[in-house]
Amino acid sequence: MPEGLKATSPKTVNGIAAFEGDYSHKGLEAFIVAYNIVNFTKTDVIIDKKTNYGNSGESDLDVQYISGMAQGADLVFLEEGNGYWILQFLVDAQRAVTGKKPTVYSISYGWFELDQCVWGTV
Image (cartoon, rainbow, N blue to C red; front, top):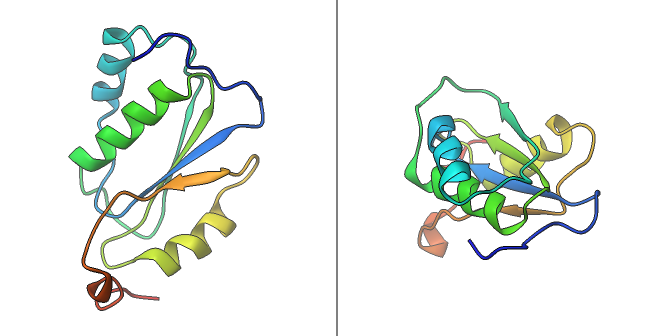
């Protein structure tokens, strides 16, 4: 991680949308130590409508690198249940996130455009 990457506004909140699992809390701790990320403040984990599916490599990368690239910024991690997709995520993000809301959410899951809404539940 390049040194000095700090959020300059206390209003900065980054968000992560996850659709297939939580992130590894131990992995995040190891990342913080390995890259000397001392300004990471907190992670709000919001789990709604699901059981814990375990951690996902995609979620691990999102949490670790977003934390490293905007050190000091709060982070909201919103995990959707299996079968939920973008529309339900947007509804839940507005309802479930209290306090400071993220300015932007990372959604780094990819499917072909025409397949994205085929299996979703609303």
